[in-house]
Image (tube, rainbow, N blue to C red):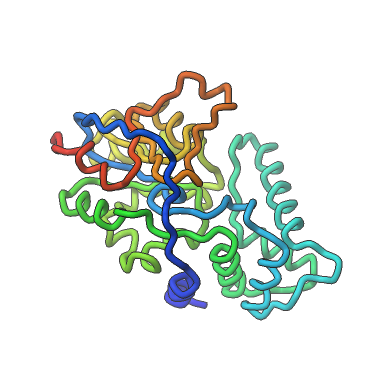
Length: 290
């Protein structure tokens, strides 16, 4: 499948999702001085049904293999378990190299798993397999108000960024489910960072520092003038605050909200603001301070 076909397949396989109320109370006091916004994707701009590994099952993988025409896994094997084992091994190897929060390219993971079974999949087959698995095991859908929010910020000329734990196909969610590409929504290329391209994942401070440098170097915007919007206290809020961003917790979906109360490293870490609907952000961020 080419990119257009992958986009069509994501659109065809996706179904509307509704957020599950979190019971959180929003904190909508205006944030003065903000001139730009960075978004997490999964669990923030897109509702997400499951984690990257947790939703993968043997049955869903066998169905995905069949959809791509790769045939079943060998009898007695558990492709879901092998998939997780290969990811963990890749992570361990990267940690040995000094990377605290490693990321994989999931196409390479599947190439290795299939290769062990004597299946030589093409790059196109691997990419289709990733999309088939993703749509079945951890579906996504735009959060309510997402298109309207992005249109508002884009039309005001705000620099917009993305920092997300993601894979090669993640940007395709935008054209598949909103009809516009990442660039068409106003995200600037130098302000977009996906974990798979860095081989490093959030909450790595390095990724946040890279983004902070890009804002200053390309737009003359300082860290305290950037609002980071995410759903996870450890992966989004804590590192954003540490590098000097303003931090807004998206608490609009109980499935993805991550306060992580058992993580002692987060003691005393609180977001600057909390929103329970993306539609609350414009009032929080406006008027523009230029």
